[in-house]
Length: 377
Image 1 (tube, one colour):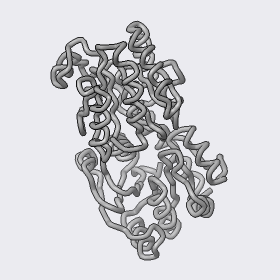
Image 2: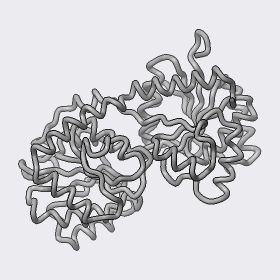
Image 3: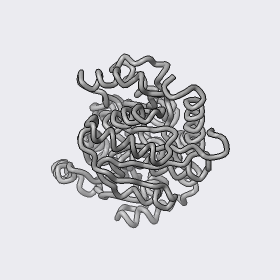
Image 4: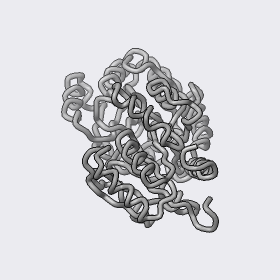
C-alpha cells in the first residue's frame, strides 16, 4: 500500500467495553495485524475496557486519553500532534463523536480520514446532521456496516452516496463452526432437561434489545412446546425488571437469565435456534455468530439483519415490537425439526460471506483506493 512498509492507521473510538463495535474491533484489528499489510494504533477517548486483551496480545498499541469536547481546540490539537508523531498514514474514527474529532484532527495533520457509522439513527438532530454535511468534504470516505445503515445515513445527512461505502462486519467462521456442539454438556450446566429445545438470546439487557417483546412471544408458545427453554445471555440495567417479568408470567422454570458470558459461540453451537428482538441494529454480530454456528434464528427485521440472513433462507424475520408475529415464527420452527435442520445448513453456508479475512481484505482494498487518489478526493 505504501511501498515496502505496512500502512500505519490510527483508529479512534471511545472505549473497549462489552459491545458490538468493541467486539468487532477486537476481532478485526488483530487479524489485520497478522496479515501484515496494516499496522494499527488505537486511541480511546474515554477509557479502556475488558476487550483490550485481544489487542494487547496482538501487540497493537492502545492509548487511553480522556478528551473533553469533540471539537475543543485543545482536543483537536492533541490528536493532530499524536497523528504526526506516530507517522500515521490514515485515520479512521468510529461512531459520531470520535469520527468528528478524528476527521478534524486528520485535516489539521494533512491526512485522509474515514468516518465509520455502526447503527441506524446514529445521526439524529439538526446539529449532528449539519456537522456531517460540513465534515463530508474533509473525509476520504464514510464507512457503514450494512446497506441499511448506508441508506439511513444518506437520507439523514444528504451526503453523496458515492462517498459512502459498505464494509460488513466479519468473524472467524471456521473457529466458530469448529466448536463441538456439546448439547448435553451445555444443558447440564444450565440445569435444563437433556431433551430441551434451547432458544438463545445473546444481547445486552437494554431497551434497544426489547426483551419484553421476546418474553411476550415466548409466553405465547411455551405451553404448546413444553420442551422449549429460553436463555438470555447478557447483562445490563434491565436485569431486575426482566426477572420480575419472567416471574409474573410464571416462566421461572423456562426462562433463564445467564448474565454476562464469554462463551456465546459455544452456547450457540449447543442451541437449537438464536432469537433477537432488537428495535434497531446496524449489522448484528449475534446474527453473524448464529450463522457461523449453523443454527436457524428468529430476529426482527431491522438494520442489516435481512442482508445478513439472506431473507428467510436462514431463519425468520419479523417486524419489531410484534409479539404475535414473533410467536408465530417461533411456533413454526419449534414444531418442525427438519425445517430447523435445513435452515441451519443454509446458515452455515451463508456465514462464509462474512468471513473475517474477507472483511480484512475489503478494508485493505478501501485503504489502498483512498491513498491512491489523495486525502479527500
